[in-house]
Image (cartoon, rainbow, N blue to C red; front, side):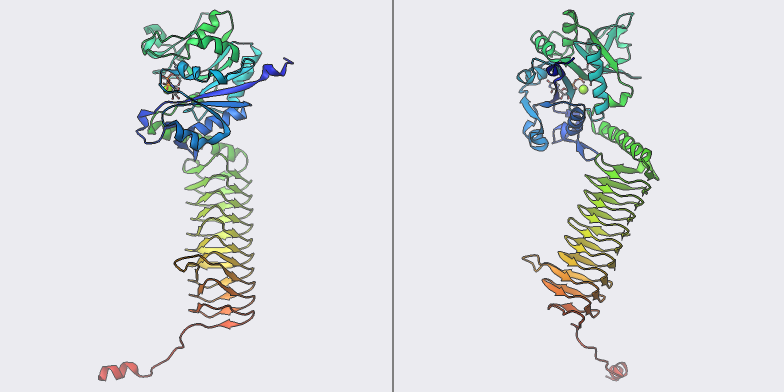
Length: 460
Ligand code: UD1
Ligand code: MG
């Protein structure tokens, strides 16, 4: 196959259905499994299998689907739901004359790029008109059955509702994913009728049509039948989430990450984790989070879209869209809000909240402190209960703290304000003016001791 056009590959993904059984305001394909929409999982797999163009058939709440998924794919609309064949007909203008086209469903998020590649390879090697991805399952109820002759050659697909007693016993089912020779699909679509129990245009009828024209049709049995599981209800959404969770956790463990309790650890597909990092139970690692080597994460921590360097500890904490440099410890019970950039060898202790701030190397923020909109230098020590008062009720202001400064316990830093290098603030101070380098700022009422006060009061 030297002609490059022969290897053209595109995909059509059906996503027009309402998903009634989800009982949701949202279109089914936008429900998420480990942080990613069902449809996006399928798009990812199609892309990783090498498709150049993807067309999504939308219908029910199509505008919402379009808005969420964006312009990484093309769209056609199916105004009425008249069956899977009818849905593909709407994409007729998208189907090229040359090469192959995958047809997939938008609600099967467990399909992998590797399996789709195998489907395409088999299709091309066997020179099939169409190759179906099938599965052997214990309970085939509801699915189309793959009917073969005694030699094992593909004869046809029969939908459950149209199947005979004999055919219902077949446990090889149509997984609902196909690789077609584009031209043959185009031709077959023209011949579809809705002559069946459901009065629908079945895509599956194209299989017989293509076979009847003398082309080879075959079904490739998927190794892991989980891959074709569709999501039709919230219960299935949870089942699919569990399977994907296990798959991702296994991949990380095989790559050298210790996961103490893989059943109780949720890692989203795009997360990267370095070797010898240990994940304790109850962690959610989300978005494009990257975690380095030799870290200790958890228990019970959520880290979203953050970069965590090597040898970092995050214990019982929440970290959102932030950076943590090496050898730093966070928590227990710390909250790093978006755009926090924490240096290395830093200590962020219990009940500390940090937002939109930089914290220099070796700085210690050990307990009960809020730092918002601040730039903190290196080797700074925060006493317990410091508050950066960043909001005056109208605007947010920035505070600066130089290197080696010492912030006494219960200091309020009224922003905007600067505490220069090596300066001290006395415990209990409310700092409203800049503190010069190496100065001590005391901003609190002096203590008065009223001697014998108690005795005097008793006499009154
Ligand atoms: C289909 C197959 C069946 C297979 C099963 C695998 C047909 C006729 N049957 O049955 O052999 O075993 O999938 O899961 O294809 N859709 C549209 N527009 C429509 C109809 C459907 O976009 O008019 C979309 C749905 O949103 C869904 C997908 O196509 O994502 C499949 O449709 P569904 O009704 O679930 O087909 P099944 O009856 O499950
Ligand atoms: Mg279905």
